[in-house]
Length: 115
Image 1 (cartoon, rainbow, N blue to C red):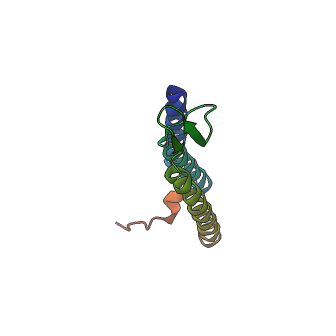
Image 2: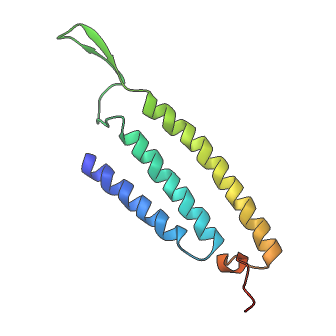
């Protein structure tokens, strides 16, 4: 299970980096979103993923009640909200840049040197 999760996180992060390196603003926004999803999966995986285990369980050997770690879940929930806000801001920024520059190619936004 851990290997499958690690491969999935790696694939999503690699696709995100590839899309970030493209020359169009839409693919850059998609790349940022994919990197955000990869980060969320990584944070969620840090909470020791177990299949079929209840979040609260009794340890009958010691008599203690064990809980699942809620910190990774809270971090992922916060990262989802921040990622949504970042994506909305990047889309608005890309739309304004497209309107002002007349295109969505990233190299057009760079100032040209007249030499």
